[in-house]
Length: 342
Ligand code: SAH
Image (cartoon, rainbow, N blue to C red; front, side):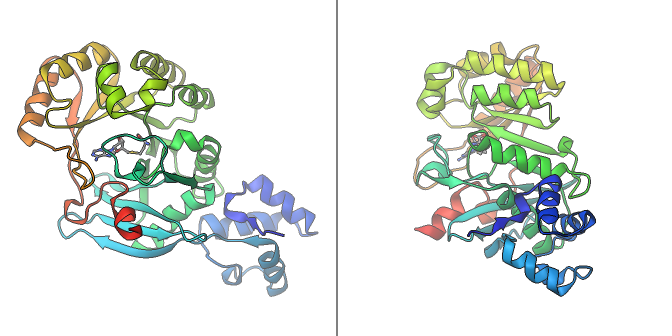
């Protein structure tokens, strides 16, 4: 029989399992504390658990550990990029970034991605599988252990589409914010989606208080469908309606992501389209110089990017240009995994 993935269990579920073993309820809390606060990687290091119980736990449960197979450290800005190996031999990435307000970790939610965005390295080799809640938590715990730095905020912006792995992502968020565990406020978590409209409605219903980032990248359906196939399923109009619903239900402002690509989406028409979509909305627009990947010939252009940004700003859009971090270590999502697996 497969052992139970203990890091994916809520405290209530763990308590139930511990009671089934004939143990006292408080043991579950102790074990949960070892796993999520002390970040133990084995039962034997749980010093207030007897060795006979530790052996029984070992037979029934497994603690999924992520192995760091590569670590790239930026010499310019403290960014660290991790390539992890999962227990089935698959690889995923996380990026630890040093901001003024603390350390932020960008984590993956799937092995590969089905969404097919034309500019993205994570989707080129297709989709392999969803990550388990324990494998998302594992990225946080392994980065903290390895770097000795405390992760203050998390962005679900690595490999994969988080809303395409909805149940596991929600469970991960519940575990991450559990008071008896890691106790991270979901105010410090952002989830980025390419726009799975039905799931945005589902997420709004849960009122979890996290920030939603929406990858827009174009302001007309024609152009967006060309670079983001998901737009053929859900139009920009449907997406914006879902975003408004999210804001109404959660009271949270939405952040829109827009990778500026030379000659593709950086013209006046594109900017005017953005103004029509976003004007008057309580939102924030984040412009990103497109990260050039070797499989595609999308180019960034700093001059056109700043002109694009200035124009939007003059027209009253709340816009910023995202600082590039880890430029010397190829920190954009999916690139390290691709290099390693080829
Ligand atoms: N699937 C989710 C989250 C992962 S991608 C989403 O689409 O939002 C994280 C962000 O990086 C998204 O905004 C995505 O569009 C952007 N991105 C992907 N490839 C990029 C590239 N080459 N340059 C700039 N941004 C890119």
